[in-house]
Length: 102
Image (cartoon, rainbow, N blue to C red; front, side, top):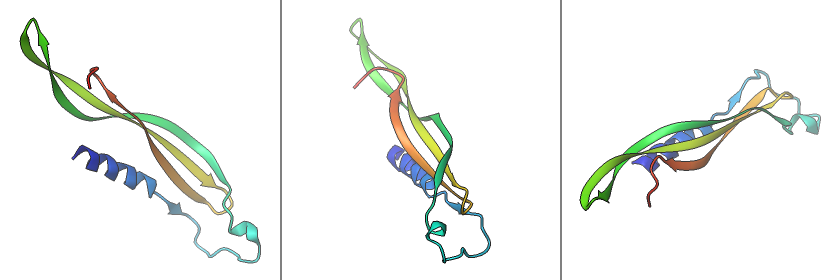
């Protein structure tokens, strides 16, 4: 279930493509067909995804404690000034557990 939610999140953000021009582009020059992408925003977000419980022994007594799972997701936004297009790239940087376990 967790993998499905993460995959859905990544797919939704990776297909976020908007076109802002209303008229068709001129096809006379090749410059109109090539995008010149410029990075305009780049940030990393730490998102709490799930919590599970781990078992451990303390003084021969079995105990449990919660372990929170976080995903670090980098979002990069590009803009093409020629066409007025934007595109978004999302990358799963790392998965972090609050407790050290295997």
